[in-house]
Amino acid sequence: MKTILLLREIYIEGFRNIGSFLVRNYFKAFAWFSFVMLIVVLYAFVFRVATGFAFD
Figure 1 (spheres, rainbow, N blue to C red):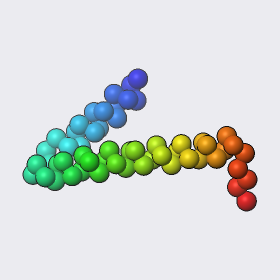
Figure 2: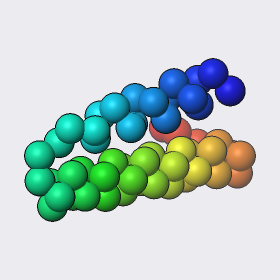
Figure 3: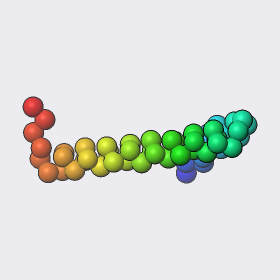
């Protein structure tokens, strides 16, 4: 739980004093997009391992 709270605080602190509204929202959207893509990659890897894919 401490790790999640620490990540939340880092996320909030990272966007606290960024200049314009457009830049701030762009970086927030990019951060969420990157997080979702990481989850997709992890899911694909776990799926391949679970189904016995041969990594040759």
